Image (cartoon, rainbow over all chains, first blue to last red; front, side):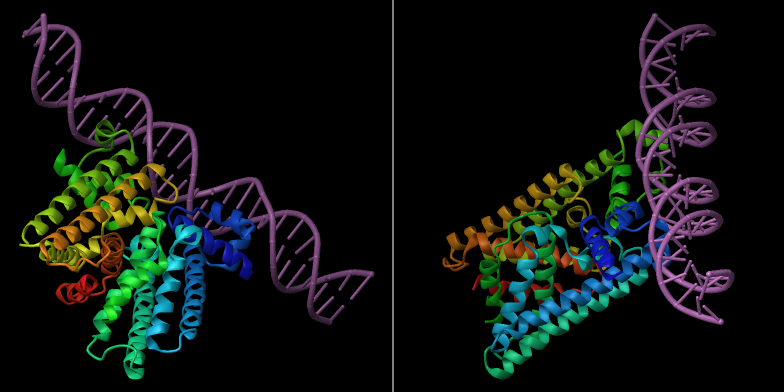
Length: 184
Length: 184
DNA sequence: GATAATAGGGAATGATTGTTCCCGAATAAA
DNA sequence: TTTATTCGGGAACAATCATTCCCTATTATC
């Protein structure tokens, strides 16, 4: 059942919510129509489950990237690099469910909008936390505004997913190298 | 007829392509179904016309903002500020057709993808041009890489539209103030 | 071993979609 | 004035959508 949800997640990421019919869903999940509706109340419920699975998975990947840095600055660099790599190439054109949901659904679906909102805030808090860690361990100057910088970095990460979806090449190390100037 | 297209543009920006039925379109344009299909070949053509109108309008606004700066650095700051303001509040939650198209359609619609691609490149070239102008007039250091910095700034602008669509508040001056560190 | 319960599969259904067709009014041509 | 022609309107259409219903295996229970 988890593998079926993963396949659904993939289709939703590629095509978005409205463009994936439940026919597409059953084909990807390798389940019949009735079986899908026995596991989930409706299409919206499938999407919500896929959304939570996606955010959980991404959060895990991001924290894992952060752990591989020896101080706040290096942890933040690794996080940005992880975002850049995931926004590029085949994974990039697969798309991010959070930006997809924000763009396609947040205007008409309050439930999705709330999830997107908390997810963005969680990510922003994580980044501002890393900045403060860096300021505590001396790897980031104290005059940097953690809140403003974190919000701008969220814009960067979300923006990378947009241009990655548009299939523009993203050179992660170079882009992150420039972005690190925000910590000067 | 232009006013009808503007109304269609607004609906497409708010709801995206798939979520706007041609019923929504006729209601917004205050035209009957047959009249819409007499003016455009199909829904896709309406969207394409709205897209071109949108990019033309936005380009005009951006260049106008740039003109109000006395050197390259100030012109670039004004451009970023213009992006931030348009990404915030009521205009922000209305959304950007370029990021909407990139996210919702670029995976399945080659025609739209090409338009999004050229639009992103045009914007990027405009920004890198401003950076080079600033380097020529001495307002931006020569060691700044115009290409990489412009691409990152495109990510910033596209990202601001995503978080603006999610209705997160965006403090333009503060965000741009931080972003200007990329020109150090 | 017989029976109840469950899970999965797919046809049927009703609503909605995008599109086409045709009608009536208004304008231009004769 | 009469006749073409254009233009906008909306009903009709076929296709597709999400959803429900029912049937058939398979498993679990007694």
